[in-house]
Image (cartoon, rainbow, N blue to C red; front, side, top):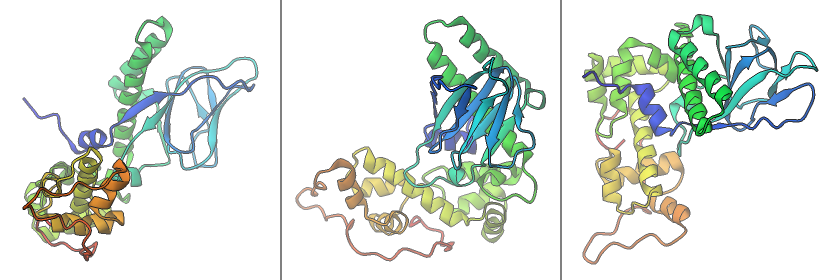
Length: 313
């Protein structure tokens, strides 16, 4: 069976994608749906027409039935009814994406994504029809199903955004759009990934691999790997793991010292200090006869652009 894993799927799993439906309780007339300023939000018009009120550049300010708008909460805006008498039917959801250290997908997220049914694959219309049916039937479990369908529509909107990118665009989504970098990006999500394994997945030398990552994504593969390892380490520490040797191993670092160097460079603190801040108790002391972790030792991090290929990150 063909593997269902890909770089976008792995990223959404890491970010713990979850849609939370926004209540339709705004009493103002004409009808208004304000965009959350602190989160990505999704808005699907099931019936009627809305006006998009925003300072962001849009090609068309009307959002019609069956159209989807994904808004990055970087600025103010709202959807408004076109008349005072009839409110449109709109399903809106907040898109929760969690990353302890900025994920490259979040940094590259566009300010607006618009998807029209006529320009989307059939699966998009199927998801819209399913959501419309759930809203009409009002059966038990409707909220859970509608939220999951919103998550599906969000991923389909990301697909559309990737397909619409120009060859001059740069960033994480542009790397996903490049057929040559899709396998290396999937490889980069593994703890054991190294620059050499990315080069092998690309079928190029390490130098040419670094050039392609930098040209399309604006980052070197070594920096991409180091930040992915630190994100894994943060997750393990937050979950309660206090054995720094185990944290280093499971997150892809070759040693505790390498973990501490990279952690301090990316997070501005040490793994032990992060553990204490999260759990609000003293960092566990090692068992008698075990060398204490070097979590609080001063260390110098490698330069961000370094392409050194080892497990140090």
